[in-house]
Amino acid sequence: MGEMRVIGVRVEQPQNQPVLLLRESDGDRYLPIWIGQTEATAIVLEQQGVEPARPLTHDLIKILIESFGRSLKEVRIVDLQEGTFYADLVFDEQTTVSARPSDSIALALRIGVPIFASEAVLAEAGLVIPDEREDEVEKFKEFLDTISPDDFKATDG
Image (cartoon, rainbow, N blue to C red; front, top):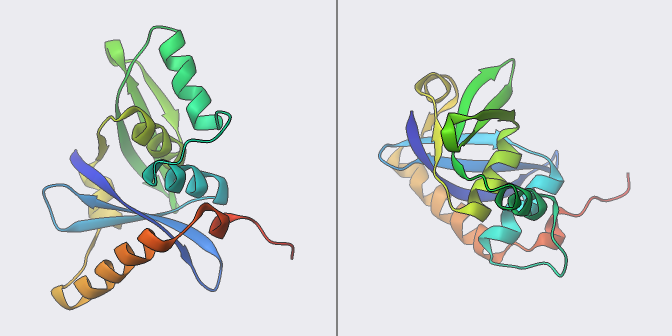
């Protein structure tokens, strides 16, 4: 398992589909995961340090975990089947719960636990971006600094 860090979320055009970009902490591979609008908003809000007036779904899950006296230890992206990623939430006493990576990562960011990806997932879906493409990654990071949660609101049509 390789530890990953969240680079950010971007809306991929023309499909208007959010993509979550992770990068190996000690490596060169990036892992793009296409996610839903709601999860994209939850991740962006947390990365920007925005605290909603009322708890959002992932905030509520964090509160429930704490209320039950449990603790989330890590998130693992464990599989990729037919274009769908699978993740596990790993709790104290090594209890695991299967979950979508987008929800798992939104929760990991709120709780402050590490995110890992299996070597098999990284081998299949990880991308090495050549040096000349690093400019694009920097532009992506700059874009993330200017994005707002309103950019993820669904439109009619």
